[in-house]
Length: 569
Image (cartoon, rainbow, N blue to C red; front, top):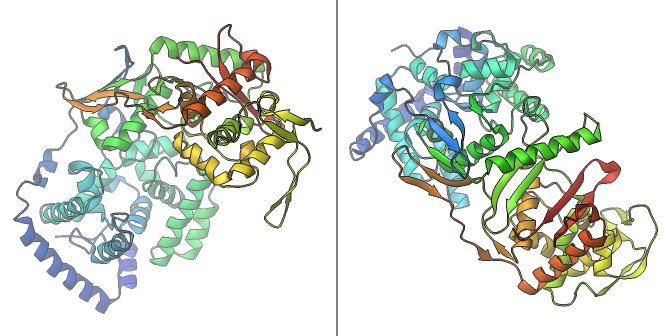
């Protein structure tokens, strides 16, 4: 059986790293353990038969609908994958991939003892499965046959099936299957489609810089995508190149040349026709996290979203009209509408023009909320029972030690108002009372309120926290304010109502199960104060002729401008 890749220098590099004696011992030990696992495999009679991979092909199409049954999209696996043989994939990419994912691929028999040992040690220390130690063979098995849930039993099944797979298929065949199967972000599955999307090139034409960047993206495609975060993608590319130098698979000179190469990106290619692409992208991402990408992509699912198609069209029109009025093309706008009674997302606009930018700012843009963060501070104060909207606070100069220096909050426009009620402070959006109250009730308690309301973005207890000196997403803010609107009752904010298979069997049912998570009296007080903002404060432009509440937020130089508002419905 020929286990060598095409590039002779690449194979020699592995030998230089492993060393003859150590390599021999490792291979002998691997063989002994592998033999033991083969024996253990006899007891795993219910595991899938890996031989089906010889004729494997995706079969079913997944459909996405709005809440009333309007079809929004159909996900065709074949539309975004072109299977290519291993000899039509650039050696630069293959070497980069193996360097960062499984440098001993051509030596182990499906399981890398060193990686497994490290993972077992880490998992034992942390009391759970946090590190996988997976080989490329194991990753392929996981993607095709097993669930994404991290369990020791699943890892054992991976190992057994990986050994079976390597008894049936040659190494090059396994690597070819993996490269044609792996997910590369932006709904790109397989190396050829990903290469054409990222660099407008065939997989066979990728140079070292491009191959290293693609290989680095596999670990977290949405995080390391050069389309959405080129800086992170570049840093990840450099990690891959450094690993290749460490393995002696490339020279330092080749590394420097690749790092200096100016990447020319292609265009994100849409792999499904969708009436509401921001919505369907968000739904797919949520389902990917629950079921795994492979199941969503070819599982024949019927996905009913929470979105109302007509409501979504109205939201998109509102965003476009606002954008036209601004007349400033460099700005972006996003909008999220959540039903407070269910926490279902009814409309979501991730940006002005999906064709120009498909980055969903509603879901993924962490921006400073400015003064729209203040209600979390004031609610926390009300929940202590010491304050009400009519309590007196002082808008007067103050200074706090902050690290090695001091921090003195200022009001927008300067000046001070002296003694005032909390209601007035919220209506006028004065900064100093919010900072003082934040320090008084405890910034850790303010953060706890945010977590209770479903905000998961990183938050640090800095003195300026009450003024929104953190990054949050519009979806997080809408979900949090929806809990105020629902008098403290909360459900999970979601774009998915129900998922069934092609035969109608329910796979996921997100029927709301609301829980009372806030102090009822304090919630009533913050609702009253935020109604005053709309009735006569900074949010009066949002008055709609019936009771409504909300809060404005503006950061320095108006880089971010927010309004978060609500009615009970």
